Image 1 (tube, one colour):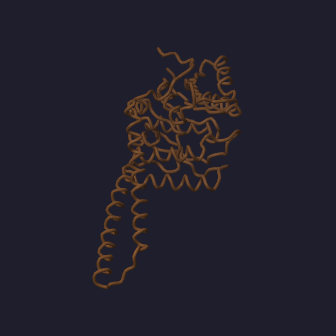
Image 2: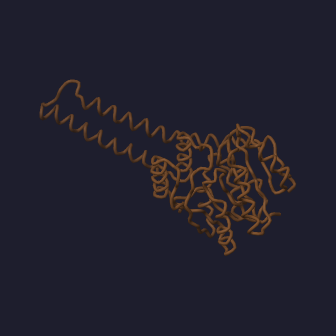
Image 3: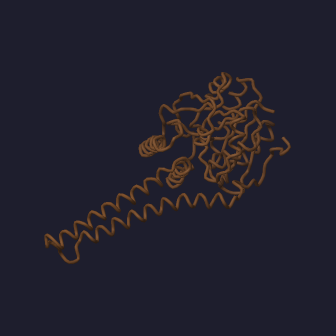
Length: 311
């Protein structure tokens, strides 16, 4: 069995795969450890799969899983973890924003006894101001509303021990947020710092809609604060409505100062209705995740692979 399994989810990365392969093989040759490169094709529409299959014919260390359709980045990483055989696993994206050379430093930390070594970003090159600000706000908000110590300014680029991977396999939730799951698992964790580069070629597969969905998965998967806020908002609005009812009765019966069709009545109805819709939406998000997990459908479907199931 290999010492290291490098898990690489790919989605339309034909311009990056050759360079990534060269840099990864150079790193692994310097380490002098046995390894496998496990590419997970998440429904790419370009020549990504053809390039990987060509590499697999030339290099026995190259393995691949080809999904029947696009299932999403987190599911692709999960499939890689399920199929990986190494004593330690490294998760890295194919866009070359995360430098493969950092794996050497991660491996040193791993040999020191750490079961999780994650890469912490000092700065993010080639990303818009909007994405930088929203990402910073999201990670810090998530850290405040959860009881978990989810590292700030980190992605999925990390090295995990086999024992961590085995626990991840036992976590069946459909809405994956892997960095949160790893934080929940625990074990000895540390980090290495780096400057994240811009994409080598191509465009990111994380659209604004996918980023919002990813953020919701992280929040609803590891915090019940939104439900508590909905309850608090309900009590708050009910209290305000009760005070306004008293004010209306006093105005009508004592002060004799009232107007038919009081405008504030309409404002109160609209305000309370808005709070109700917000709370119903929050509850609906949690119910949707319960429904998804109850169906117990497979996380992904593999169309083709060169990974031997016996291995």
